[in-house]
Image (cartoon, rainbow, N blue to C red; front, side):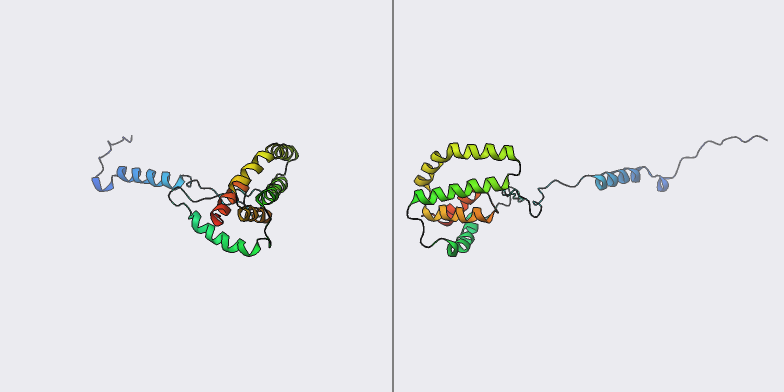
Length: 165
């Protein structure tokens, strides 16, 4: 006796799985999608100290509010007496910046190049600092560079806000 294949019967609508297959594929695609990218915080003890602000454009910090907090933290640490003039304060700030960047650059060749660039621009930077930066601002930057937790441009902005005189 020979078996013959019977034609398949159409499935009733209740057992048709085609719409569910689409949902299953969508669920799998969503589950396998990579997580959204964000800037991870720097690892503890990292020598790089740039402002790694993970906040997006819609959630910007209150820079003036942060400057008020900075002022409160730095004011008791400012030298007493302050440097006598802007040139002295600015020279100390630029020396602290050169020391800071020499300390955080691990590779010898880039460190030497950076130090050469800082020496080349020092007089121009000193003149600009004397013209635009108060003694307390320059002293604030010098102190904060010694803390090794932020770079010169960020500190100059924040200290200028904290000590606008």
